[in-house]
Image (cartoon, rainbow over all chains, first blue to last red; front, side):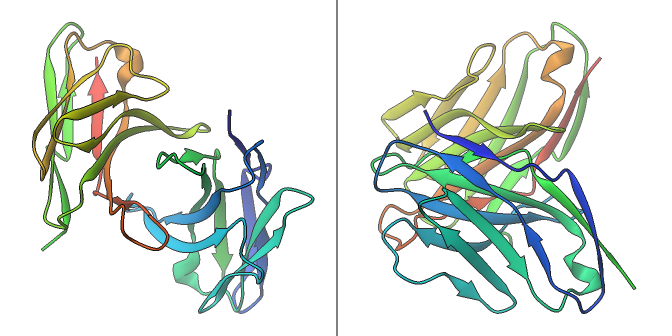
Length: 114
Length: 114
């Protein structure tokens, strides 16, 4: 079974600073994919970034980067130069090799302060 | 226009009532999913379908049923609603041919069972 753990229920960050959201996972499959989604207060789920287990480099997408440490089974999301619009809940999710279902963590709420 | 739509967006119903949540997509994806979101638990998979003739239970399917009427439509039914089914429900789609197989979410349906 796959399990995703996000240990930070909520975080505050100052505008223009960087913030790191923790995500650890547990799987026995060598092949898997890791995702981060953003859920603003309006409720929709927005795909941010993807990391494959065999990817040699950490994924980046604009101000989002994924700090992937395979041996530690962690996939932390880094948001650089935080903006007020980054205030939202962030979910880490994983899917297995032949399994297109996603398992989600409990989420981390980020509040960006001006 | 949104690629994944859900109706209704909000619904209040009473215990014991039958209710159907509908999902439509214009993305042309074969794979469709239903999740529910509860505070502190992230999103949990209820049912998923990889094509019109394929329906699979997720981790919390008890008390729910689904119907895949067409490639573009996937409905979730609560045969006899109970208060602990109060939650935010999401429909999602994915494309088996995409690089990441990321899921695209509808706007959600907020269901309250009194």
